[in-house]
Length: 321
Picture 1 (cartoon, rainbow, N blue to C red):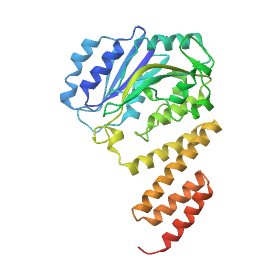
Picture 2 (spheres, rainbow, N blue to C red; picture 1 turned 135 degrees about the vertical axis):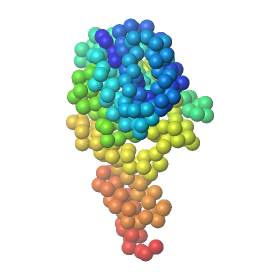
Picture 3 (spheres, one colour; picture 1 turned 120 degrees about the horizontal axis):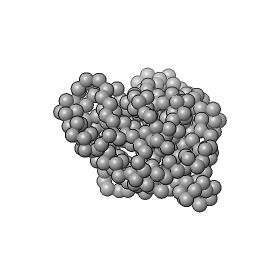
Picture 4 (cartoon, rainbow, N blue to C red; picture 1 turned 45 degrees about the vertical axis):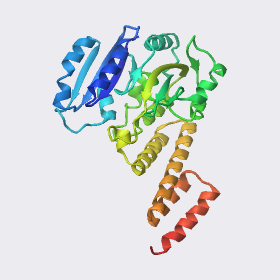
């Protein structure tokens, strides 16, 4: 099966080179890599011809906009790559991360060829933090019970939507491979957001899949952004804004999916985020905003304790500061 790998990038040619060289180490030959450059500056773009010549014909460079223009963001960039992709399967890798298992594509190709009912597969990745700490399993709850999951082949096992919901996370794009028709069915990435867009994409894809597969084999290494540096979308957003966007994404997932299990999970998640925002506003002497958010949180996830808090927030909103 032919596999298309989409790699968005902007002004990080050294990291991009490392990521692309790691992809080139794959033993499986039937793939292409679509590198979507999102408005990098002229100095960066001048380095691409030599890089492409070194990597070979499998690597295709797509330029977005003019040199140095404001970036459109990873959601639109990935959608552009998807629109140009020729593969039956789609995979992704962030430019600051890398694949570390040369057999990764060979394994997923074999899975999709032999298991016609599987539309999406998840592999494991390790997370490396800026202080040097390493988390070996991205979804430890699934990895811990891998032996209890029904086997599909020597690497992959069947995983249910309920088990995914109980896993306490989601499949980062580096560890994901999906049939093209699934991505078409969900209209790709939601371009309204560029934070938590991977979470939104994953759950909407998983919702329309006939079958899901998981392996605890580590295929990728994710370098967790340094929260002290403003060099990427995630770290550039203030905490309050992150909660707001994450709540919006949770609502989008809940109203987009057909699975009641997933919808309930993300309505609850939205409620948790709104509670944090309500408490944040209360701490910063914004009683009206705190009350509004507290009521919304109560509607998303009811509890007696939070209902009492809403009454307290209402009383606080009546007092002049």
